Length: 217
Image 1 (cartoon, one colour):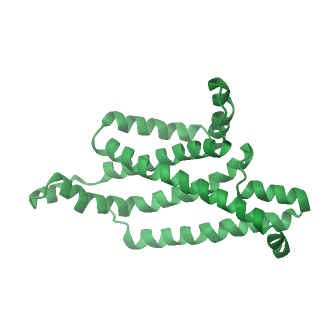
Image 2 (cartoon, rainbow, N blue to C red):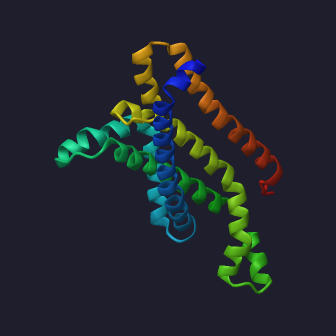
């Protein structure tokens, strides 16, 4: 197993970098836009709230892989365009990530007790001060674990990119296996990679939730 890793280290590194780049762009699109959309839906606009809820339902009933294939094949055929599969993956998973994050933020805002805002008003704080110093810190403490777990899911979803020929880590592993045919060693390396990345993340999130998440009465 080690000898394969050493011999094909450049290919593995290329696949790893592509996976990391995919995840970075998916997070960059999904998290900020999701927080913004969720904040608007949870506080300012019932129509945006309905849109977020509808999109969340859509992502539940349409599997991510089906969405990815639809964007890559039928949609591009209908529009008469050809888009690099890397960017098709970024758009598909970025969209799914954005909807998930928006729904998390929107749901947490709706759960936030009105008593916190009333306490701020009693103290003479402005609406922006209440949001900045009371609501936002509480919201992020509660939402952060769910958002982080969703990013872990996005990392797992990047595996689907191999099915539309994106040379990420899984696709590279398949290519190497076609050359040396040692699936036990190659896919064991893949298991180790995801275990090393995801196991500590899940443990840290669990610890964080126990120590920091605020529970409403």
